[in-house]
Amino acid sequence: MKSPSLRRLDWHYIAMQMGFWAMFAAIVAYQTALLLERGFTNGEAGLMTSVRCLAGIVFQPLLGGFADRHPGVPLKGIVGVSLALSLAAGVWYWAEPAMGLAQTALVWVVIGGLGVSSYPLMDAMAVQFINDGVPIRYSLGRGLGSLAYAVVCVLLGLQVGQWGVETTLVTFLLLTAAEIALVFTYPTWHPKAPAEGRAAAERPQSALSLLRSNPRFTLMLAGVLFGLTAVLPLSNFLVNVILSRGGTAADLGLAMFLMGGFELPAAFLFPKLLRRLGSGRILVLSMAFCTLKGVALLLTWNLAGVLLCQPLQMLGYGLFTPASVYFVNESVPPADRVRGQTIMMVASNGLGGMLGGMLAGFTLDLGGANWMLAGCVACGCVSVLLCLLALPRKRGRSG
Image (cartoon, rainbow, N blue to C red; front, side):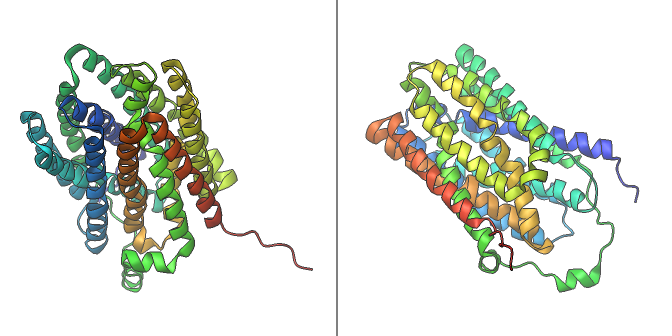
């Protein structure tokens, strides 16, 4: 079978990344604003964020485990079907604006558990080709994905100001349909050499076995968990920070544009940093800047200050995703790499998002945005410490 050209693989994957993050912005960036518009409280909005992330915690290992056990099933098929089910849930969500808490939770279970949670398998679609020696520019794709996220956020801000928050769901549905088309038309990976003997010798481990056999990987996951608990409320509940500093819900679009836009330079910095520092140290750097962003937001007193904090995203969350993908690829056996990517996503955007949503909902109702930011800073400090402990010790010279 003739292999697809590198140019096609590269640009198609970049388009797929951009499509995913545009879709993600349309449903997640305005999740809190939409829930508040529909009459839910801050606590209930935090609960829905936790439900979305908890669904990812449940479904991501199941999707990754299924992919590892059935290598003959193309990853793009699993991703495409997951996105299609998420699209169906989105249609229901849009058609029933008066739905109650239980129905809303069910929608977020599907969107979070299948749509948003298909992302690690999309990472694995690139890693399969990279491990076969095909130099797909993953970090560039992720960076342009951030740019797409930023552009969609600012356009959504204009859309919300003109037509209201509910219209963001229409944008989500259109972008999801486009992403499904991109996924299903992506070239299917075929290994260069099946290596039947190797496949028989290397069997996928369970998630628990993988964590037990690799304590440094597990410790880094713990650090990432605390780090994402700290940083995700800074985007998922940024509207609360903006409102507390005198801004409006429409200003969220500009703030999210700056946040996503400053992740793009990280795509160009990442390859150089990877060669100099390695993926583990980049994760430490990322968690440190995520924490610093929380400190900076805590010190702001107006909308301009909130906007001026967004460049910290470049060395914070902007470095996290490519660093985490490469860290998993370097830290786990080949047979467990798909599962490893899903475990990383569970620890970060899954558990971290769930705990971050709970932290934000509780602290916002308790004392407002400053209490939330203080809690984020505390979690970020724990994250940096754990990630540092996960790095391999340098051996001193003997003699």
